[in-house]
Image 1 (tube, helix red, strand yellow):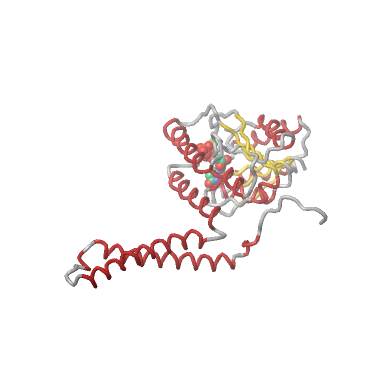
Image 2 (cartoon, rainbow, N blue to C red; image 1 turned 135 degrees about the vertical axis):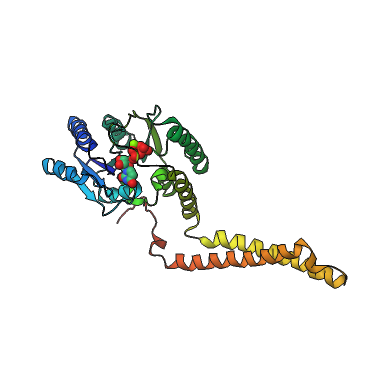
Length: 313
Ligand code: UDP
Ligand code: MG
């Protein structure tokens, strides 16, 4: 199969028929062998009924329904698992992303051999204060932290080589950082394409202010898991040892001063408390690292590495 479209949706009943019609039109024009995977993220409106109806008319339209609302990342993750196409394109269900962008994105993956192409909503039709300005800030931070030169990390419209989506796991609210996940997994050819963005036609936005906090915590876990999940001791052990040694050094100094001068006010100075806390914090960090190391040794995925190529097998 050439192409899978993965579309997570939450209460988008009005948009679905129009969206699927449009995608079908574009895909038929280019004669793709394609599938549309609609992931219903626990909608409380008629979205699922609509999906069933669409699927009955066109068997290329497939649906997955969650028991409850898990979030966009979960939807993408399930869609990725089911996808069979060599190129996988994700888009939002609210008609803000235009299916007319599909052929060019497809070509960038299939012909120009990108691993991942992210859409860039250069001209954006959302609220300036609550969406556009925070998003500029978010993108600048993520660019700095990740070293990936993208303008619009969180664009719903993205295209992937099949191998990329089969090797990453998206959970929490990590859909904002999929390019980072891909980079951590070793996929380096990441590109960008300016895409048309349209005002939301039906319904309302599903992301409120909580996205700031969750987004921030998620980037911390990504950085941390990406760097240290397979070797926790390198982080905790290092800081633990440093703290412990610093504490020990100060306490040595205090003890020797006391021995040399009986009037030395040992407990009456900041160094005393600093050394005590440093020793305790150091041991705690070390222990945390040690326990994490034991857990990591037992984790089923401890030895799963991505194999780029094989020969003679
Ligand atoms: N979405 C989802 N689960 C959620 C929230 C959103 O599947 O819990 C879907 C939503 O239906 C849409 C896409 O994610 O297809 C993007 O959401 P939205 O358009 O509300 O975000 P915005 O464009 O306002 O950032
Ligand atoms: Mg939207």
